[in-house]
Length: 80
Image (tube, rainbow, N blue to C red):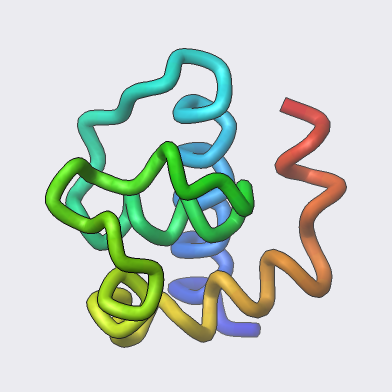
């Protein structure tokens, strides 16, 4: 995994941790949606994204990061 991929993974993990802790985030819409999928919690989707398929499609390039985090890095999400 390249450094830029590692940085993106860590950034999304940090956003997911913060969102889980506080229930809110100042991250971009795509990052918030990614964090909601990482946490498997629809309640964390931005208000205008109540449809899961629409939200998943909105992720674009973040989809691969969500999949990587869910399969390899959830222990880091839960540590926070």
